[in-house]
Amino acid sequence: MNFNARIGKLADLLRASDRTFALTGAGISTESGIPDFRTRGSGLWEKADPAEVCSIAAFHRNPSAFWRNNMQWWQGFCAAEPNVGHHALAGLQKAGLLFGVITQNIDGLHRRAGSTVWEVHGHLRTVHCLQCDRREPFAIIEKWITGGEGEEAPRCNCGSLLRPDVVLFGDQMSPDFWVATQVLSGCQLLLVVGSSLQVYPVAGLPQLARDLVIINRDPTPYDNQAQLVIRESIGTVFKELLDEMGL
Image 1 (spheres, rainbow, N blue to C red):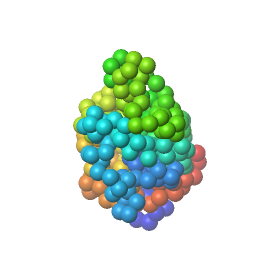
Image 2: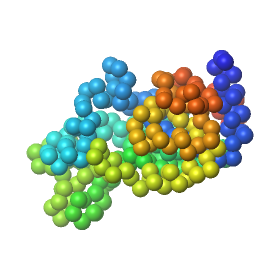
Image 3: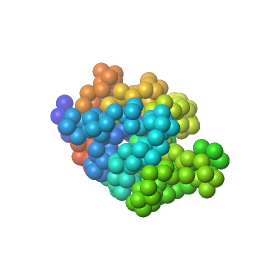
Image 4: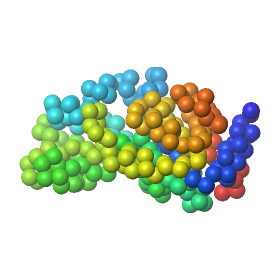
């Protein structure tokens, strides 16, 4: 099946489904300038061991080093802008063809594009205090980094440490993950976009959908179960899809 035929089939599947969601991973944000985690030669985790650098154990062991190491890429996440893929999913929701987006990404780009979104790995909008649970804007960490405030880790007014509102290695899953498992009840069509479907428990979510479409550059463990697999640029796929559907 050629590319145009695949786009036509995707449009038909969307029109036929009464309850469609999208599940997105790092691949949808690469066109916003955010590198993904596993691409050979450029993936973030080729440069650092995530279980070591981005873990709750690393945070408690040396919170100052934790923040400095992770802010190397988190500042780039915060500066990025939504791309064609993010806007297209928001447009599909506005047209009544999509209920919302479940994302593994912490960059907040779906929310900024206008989608209803469940951020199963958390987000970079806020941090919170380990002692009093007070929340502060994430900008407080950026100020700490750029201000060169020594080696002392950023702290709350009460004196306790501030930690990110993201799911670190070793953390429990976020409340959004458990909500996502509920909203997927009765899902007729799940669009998996830019996810390798290798990180559990999120990789188990496609099992809750009746039909799958996978739009991802590389193979996934679910390819043989999908009604349609498209291995092209996500931006190109959604631009052609919106044209096909007259949106």
